[in-house]
Picture: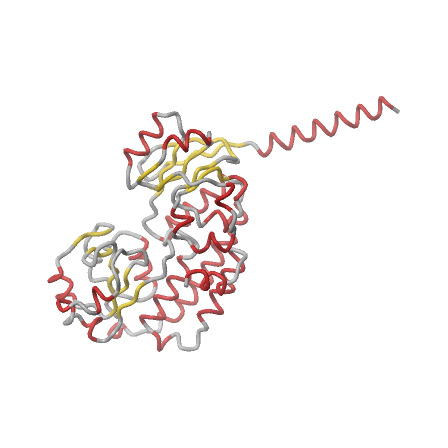
Length: 329
């Protein structure tokens, strides 16, 4: 009887070893800077400095050792999905102001950051840290980054589910704007960190403009963003202006500024400050719907925005949109 027990025990141990072997794999990724990075996966101790909305979306809380402090100070989603996260997942600075000592103390398997400051990435590598840099410049690139997370954290099926939920909203938008005649297409401008910094022809924002049937006057500029003269914006005279939700100036800078008064969007009260949501997130889908409805309200008048977004939030983040909206206010 004892011999049988020992054999059974060995079988169980070998089975577990086999499962462990199956689950252990490597992920090789060519990042935005052209660096080829190979990572042992699934990752169990990640520091996430940029794509932190994917933590609740993919349910990888237990695999995150450190996070960008903006997730706690600027992200209403975190307050709703994991109100006590700050007690267990320390902040380690921001993507362009990293606390290297804090990161080293966490002994992470991987750091995921953005490529805005490549010198910071190089410095972290010199300290023996493994770093992947991302900078999605379109919706397809965002999906690629999301799928990377799926592979890194063994959440590939969940990632595809989230992408499908985003596509449901995108399909709704595309179906509505497909019926808009070319002569009725609006000229839309996105203002960034300064009132004269505009989103140009490269980037997620320009992809959204194309999706929602807008003409981006700055779309011919093959850059992500550029600071232009106010005179140029006046010449463009966009029909609709969107302001980045985290911009450090009030909407009145545009709507009440005497120099802006001749711009069509200002004259017709069509200047909107976007929600403080990252566009490198599954929340890009509700942002796109919000922008489409602001631009072409007559084509979306029967769409229940709160209802659509609430279903999206419940499916993707496990919380209601009402909870998030209440926290944001």
